[in-house]
Length: 180
Image 1 (tube, rainbow, N blue to C red):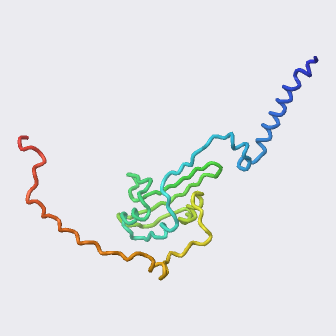
Image 2 (image 1 turned 135 degrees about the vertical axis):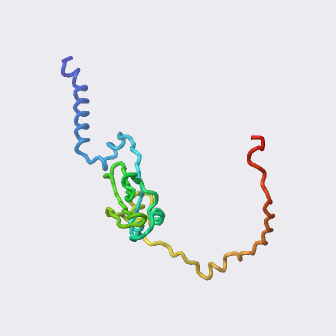
Image 3 (image 1 turned 120 degrees about the horizontal axis):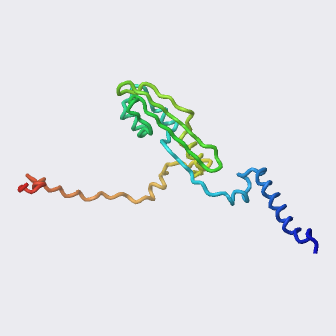
């Protein structure tokens, strides 16, 4: 048997493997299920505060720090050296999608909000839809009860009045023993 015939099947397999390997680099990896089947899973990485356009619309100059914290949440970055500045940073890294990064910076003068700077922020619905976990129907149902559905509901009964609480003790026992 000739040398060529003995090496033929092995060379054929090497040729097919090289052709398949070179084809992988020319195919769009997100649309090719075969290529994606051999990629490791990368979990979504969400870091920071999600701040939406509705939250930023609620900010008004003159608000106190507590009011700003109630609207935006606790800042991700609050520096000791820049105590009149709070930074809200959000990053999202997902497999197959370009990383997202947004920033909102809030500036105070003493204890009042002076101004704020923000990137283009999505609405809450847009952000939830971008996460891919919320499929909104094309038309949301009306949240109203008709008179027919109200008549079908059971009539609420009045609860019995609660018994009054006993009076508080005049004194409490000591927390530590008196021998100390």
